[in-house]
Image 1: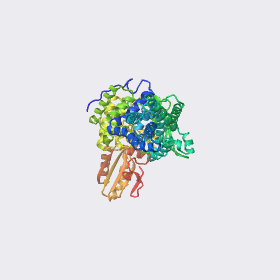
Image 2: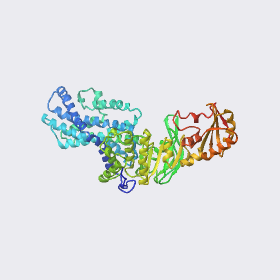
Image 3: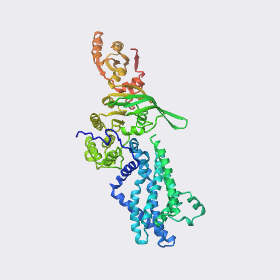
Image 4: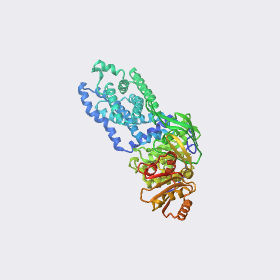
Length: 269
Length: 340
């Protein structure tokens, strides 16, 4: 056993003198969340393949029902990315739930980390594999006639990130709310996930659906985000569809963070 | 280092029902102290600690920790304290070294110092080879040492330990304590811990704060608590039941004798009492008994434990069920209370 020599953390003993920065704290949380994934190449590999499986199995059915044509992929690739973002961020609360039960989350609450960073960092962590998945999906679809508009695609990914932060924060809030009955998490998450997904026109276009479905979709932020994604992936950066997508994503983020932070402050009770 | 005034916490688990978890705790802890907060489950130990570490806001009263108010300057408090909670601070999905490095980053260490600090702590807490291991693959004792290491990353001046050794076997408990005490000596830390292990509080703490039903009911060093609140206990046995009254009279006459009990249940007569100074009272008793013609067949001195302290304060034992038979049934019909 060796003697411990005290290294004085920046700013001297016991504490940090530097100002805390939300960006820096978010980066710390995100990096910490990413580490287990990076350490496990298999999960990374399967994560990359997953959207391809869905694309390969659902795409042909969709292509058949929509009458074929290259337009299908242009329509469906943004769907797949949106779906991956939706699934990834809406389940962040599940990881958190586990850390709640073990005590790791409590430890984070006692550190000087900025509170919003705990939410934003966790949600943004989902964007890193999503970026990788986007590259894989696009690369695979290019030979099948998918057209890549790089600038639009990049803005589209940023749009998903904004929406994902909001959804991730809501997932976090859900985890806090059900922390004493954790099985509730998946029940509630699934109950919201599927209507949200179907009523956004993610898997099948809503144009052919009944009027009431289209009416409900008007209140679904994800529907606006997806419309904007399709416009962006088609290279259209300036249309009002894109603007409405950002409005819907920003609104989701604001609501999510407000609820999430409020809930977090009471989460140690 | 810590200054609380009438610190209070009420919970309302359901409408119309209020639980008074902490009722007006006033406590001062000076720099460098090692304080154990001792009490049964539900006494308010953890709730108090959660208020001091800014996890939950007090309902009433105030608390200053490391010079900052826990409500109005909670961010400052968090920068200055280390905390090892009841659960596992290290997330199970993470690698040991990664968690320590993350904690370093959180407290503003740059990469190089964080890595150096991680190496030092792994070494110091006997986790040297486990840096690459997943936390879920560690043993209970290793995991607990990692939790402590995480709490020490930023070399805090004040460390809170909430039931640090619960669930560890005796060997791992002793081992963990070796590490904690060494860290304290090297870092000049103030330590506040909660525990329901009596022997642990007795052996490790320089000051024991006994809490029950959300209130501080005693606060002193373990030796003073034991001598003023419990005292030594002498037990003398004689083969003849007829001699019991005489023996009881002699025991009652010992300096500071109180709580005299006569037990005739075993066929012999056993007389027990709290006295001021057990080791000197015993020979005195035996000499007096011989002079009166009572043959003392056996005699013992029991030094008091913190459980005796708790018992004398509350009339209840701190020990788990089963070990409480003697102390919890003072009016058992085989025993007669004799006025001291």
